[in-house]
Amino acid sequence: MKRGISEVVGGKIASVIFPPCKLQPISVAPNHSTFRRRLKGRTIRGLGRLGKRVLVHLSGDFTLIFEPRMTGLVLVASPPNLSHLRLKILLEDCEAQELLFWDRRGLGSVKCYSASEFQQVYEQGQLGPDALVVTAEELETRLKRSRRAIKVALLDQKQVAGIGNLYASEILHLARIHPETPCAALTRQRWVKLRQCIVEVLEEAIRYEGSTLSDGTYRNALNQAGNYQNAHRVYDRAGSTCPTCERSEIVRTVLAQRSTFFCPRCQRSMTRG
DNA sequence: CCCCAGTCCTGCGGGC
DNA sequence: TGCCCGCAGGACTGGG
Image 1 (cartoon, rainbow, N blue to C red):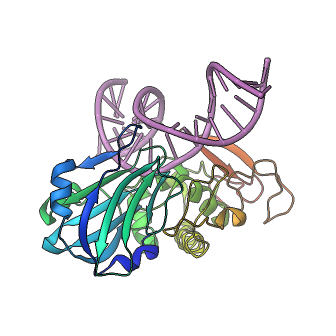
Image 2 (tube, protein in one colour; image 1 turned 45 degrees about the horizontal axis):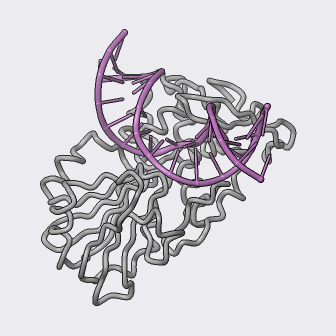
């Protein structure tokens, strides 16, 4: 999503519009008027990412933070519809005419923080190391004393930032680790393998422009559907044959109230294999 | 501290 | 055909 909005860099924010919306409003921080005041007239200096959040760095040391959660989109193209359009930022002096935030369920948020506010909110410990750059040693050090299931731990953004429910199942299948394996039971070798698979799955998903599931919500910054759902090995594939062993059927379970998919043959043991 | 369950939100789809 | 209800999950909260 971040990559798709690069054409906003260098732009100047001409106006900030919260379109009238009959739905429950999304969260805006610090509040609507401060948000608008902080954005207006500023120049977009660059882009960043913090786990699943998209960062837009502004002049004056402010940072605009998009948190899309499941159904939010950061767009530089027409949104899927107007009824769920939550924020419209009109731009000048850059390739993109506008930067939009669209969110069907409204669980996402937009924030604009000063450097010190940003530091406070995302102080050390709030978010773990980014999943794309975490090392096996960091993962092991953070989790080896935990008795939680590895699938649940991978979703904990304080431990490692950037892995969502869908990708946790895919990562563990590729790493051939049973999702209920207690973190403390994983060997050094398994942490190394796990880190490799985290990077492999996430980079693959990014190449495919993400997963557009059956509800059709996820889109890239140009409102184009992703293709990673066609590459899923286990997610949402309960009952179909495992593409790795081509023998067992994919099983669905629930861990920490989240759907979890795995192959009982490839991800057999809790502690070895 | 560690960990889990409940909560928020909207639209889709299964069941009847 | 239409209605109702369960479900999807990322982050946060409260509590054991």
